[in-house]
Image (tube, rainbow, N blue to C red; front, side, top):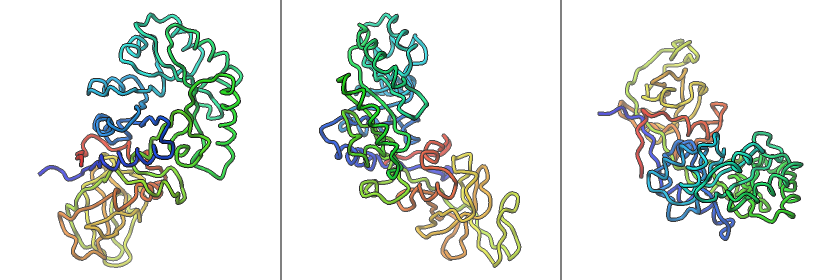
Length: 358
């Protein structure tokens, strides 16, 4: 029998999550963001599952886009990081990809590119994120220069929020205003909203939304949210107990003796470790479910295994089912015990974890 570490992907949950995101602005477009192998869920499988509902997809780079095209995905695909070298542009043109443009040099490269057909460019504004984008003072000039090129058929105005998941801050309203001031004159389609922007900020829902993490059932918000609470977890990471032992008070579990018991303890060893993508820095007490009952991690996560406390689950045995996160244990709850976020958990799953689609 194969090692039991498994990531089960509920494609119908992803579809329902997309439709929830779409429902807040049903007359506008929504690109399903499936970069980083659909946040670890499988880009080709997710794209195929969404192909009848999605208005298009977003990926980081041309390699991710070509994988989708080779799999028969014909919907629009946006390259969120744009192109890196000039030789990508003919491929972008021939494969009908949309392309972010985030600096003046890229505009010059497009101007000198021999293309078979013009492309759709998403001109990125740096309105406070300070990663990529044209500054507000240079944005209008960049737009007019890009729009005038025969190599460009359409231009979309694009920005990215830095704090949309913190609705108590004024940051998002300020960033919206920066783009709106420019857009009043430029008269082009607009895309602002990421996952948090789509669910929370009415004024961010423009011509194109870009839902990402919410497709996979994780909320971008730290607190309860009426829409985010309707999301359905799409990935269940599971394994099995492969050994059980009894230890006495004063004995320790795992490397470096980071956990020592103060009473007789029944310990289960689970086939799951950091080489599978489960965080090594998960704290003692990080929740898991064993045969549906709440348990906790004890000791340090090792490369291939981790230990759980079975003291209150007397029926647990070798072969018992262990849910590390998923339908019954939110990834956000696990992430909080690992000083990280669900994005990191999902994208960290390694290739030796079996993927199963349902």
